[in-house]
Length: 155
Image 1 (cartoon, rainbow, N blue to C red):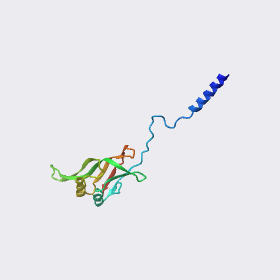
Image 2: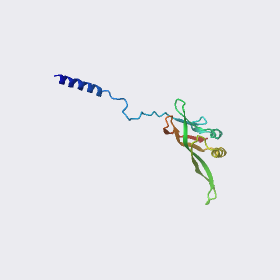
Image 3: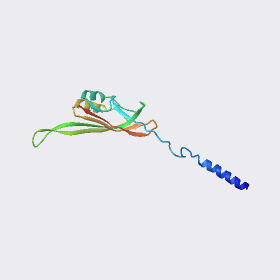
Image 4: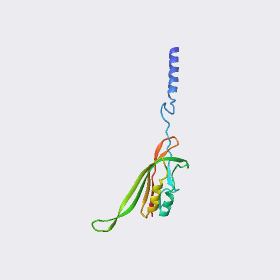
């Protein structure tokens, strides 16, 4: 009878302990919360822009911030600059226009090189587009994420 009582007691204790599962399994990583990042350059987040304003902001650094105004390092971005170019048609002799684009990738910087800034300032025209894309941001925990692109259209 004592053995039966001891077996029931041990069974109930084991059953009670089995109900208390650990909140995190051993060896499991804690879930990382990814902040919502917004990008800006010269304080602007994209949209229609005048040639004068674009000429001013190209000297500014790209800035990555979250909803709590925390800033993050930018380790890579790509610039696309779309514009209209003109050429003379060989058959008709008429001047025609076509869409053209210049692009480059930049690493370990958040600002455009001087040559790019000067080129943009010297050639801005209505209808041009500047797209900052493929932006890689480093989070506080060292993780890297891709941030949203910024698109400016010159009006």
